[in-house]
Image 1: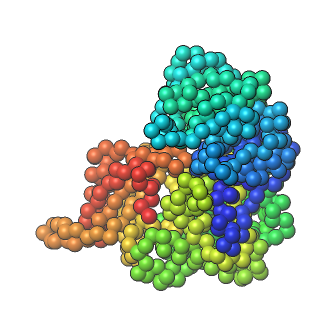
Image 2: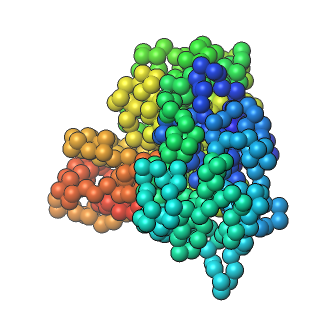
Image 3: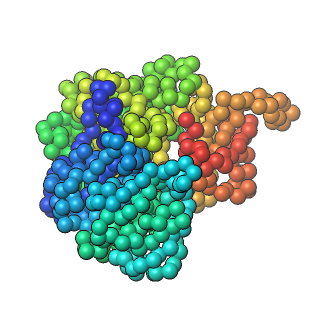
Length: 548
């Protein structure tokens, strides 16, 4: 079970079917692993990401299920995550004692360091106004003693940038520990018990703002835990196939295709696991990119021979979206209507027990907030927060612990064409969330044509693969223009292009002015209904990648 699963507890309590939990791993797929105990941090999944980047399989388990996961997985090491909670708070999470008694190496990160300190006999104190108020953001620590985590990386006396985010702090380390690095706000920035192979960092090595963080985690899994780092996406593929077969059994699965990489990779993976038990449904809701329908039909019917039902639902969706301007209302209508269409098609094919989706981890953590945590609902993704309370099928979501770049890697492992795997992300709700305000067929047609011109120019310039995501947005604004000797009063189009690794943060792509001028000229000349083009220079945060 991953961290995202726990974030959906409140949704499941409202009647949603539970997503697929992790099944026991087949011996042939994984022999070495790291167990990550989740105390509710918003970035726990990044820890798993860094471990995987080091070539080692990892699983995330909520602290309430950590003991069961420990006994099932038989890991070679344990990492304790951060948390929005404070160790001094009554009722704050604790780690199962069996982890400390196991003799395995343990790395505690932020709250993980503090809870380990507390449970092993040290002291953690809450921040106090006027004495200390925590340490947040960029900080610099000084290495005071050698440590296995620093082996081949950091030397005594050196200063290194890290990322801090804590209000409480350790004021007395537990017996057996010693300080190996300090910072201005955290005299116990890194502590170590080399005899037991217990380590604690007050900073967050998993985030990109700690430049050497990935290397520190790699040192933990390789040098401390002694793992070879030979886990691959091929092993992940094998693991997921086994999990899908265990979950589905002889049941039938219907998979909703959006036309994007996520749902396509999920469908191909599931088809490899269960064959003709899978039927894919592609809903043409009128919110697709140019020629999207034809591309999907060709991929699934001609190349993979996967049963595919194409539903022409444009009129149905446009009718339901008429007059809807609130972005959350749009997303939730589209999500509910998707499920309604899937259920109708499931009946037509003789019934289905499961609904497969290409949900990714960023979708989940932006969609659902858990009680007491720092995560807030940024926007409801159509396949997470947009699901209706009534649900007649169980969910199969084999990609929900992955980030986008990992999905691309899995797609290549499954043999998907690079031109398809490398496609920019496209949201399940489609063009509806790229049209702020009311949505109708005319606006969709305008946006479809403009977006195609924009992407055509990006490809022609050789920039497509350098950009994470690029798209056009049709604004609910009209401006006066002049074409020839005539006055125009038409739409404003915004262009968006960002670079990113996993979609959690993003920077704008710095097009040169000649490129933007050429694109704007083509769009105004070729797309009837647009007379002005602007470029969005906002990073994420403070903005999101999509506009809605």
